Length: 180
Image (cartoon, rainbow, N blue to C red; front, side, top):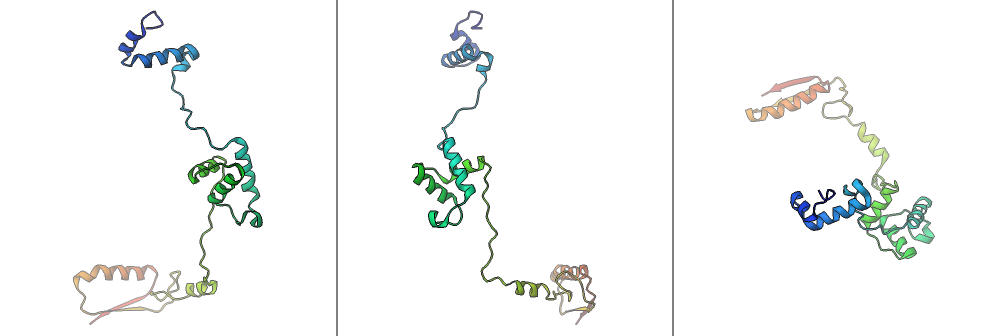
C-alpha cells in the first residue's frame, strides 16, 4: 500500500496498527528488504563473561584446584564465583555461572553419599539371612513348610491374609494353613 504511493496513516488504519509501528516497519523494510519485516531474536542482556573469561574458567576447571593455593579439593560453583571475583572483579550469580558452564558442556557431578560407618561384612551377612517365607532373600524356599495359624478370622482381615498367602506362594514356600 505504501509502496504504491499510499500514506503511512492509511496503511496503519488498514493494518490495525499504530502509525509508529508502521513507521518502524517501513524503516526495517527499507534497510533490509522483506527479511527486515521478520522478527528476529531479541539481543537480550549482554553476557557478563567475555570469551577470554570463559577460556580461563574452562582451563581452571579442567586443571582442577590446587588445595594449597585455592583452599579446596574440588570446584563448587561458589568457589568458581570467588575465583572470578578475585581474578577479574566479576560478580556473577550461581545460576548465571551454572548456565555459562552448561553452555561449555560442563556438567555438575555428585557422588552418591556413603555412610561413614557402613560395613561391607554386615551387608553381606544381612543378604544371607532367611526371609519370612523360609527361603533366602532371593526368594528360594528351602523346602520347609511355613505354618500359618489363624484364630477368629474376621471377614475384614481376609484381604490381608490373601495378600500374605499369595506372597508366600510366589516364592515357592510349601504352606500348611490351620485354624482354631
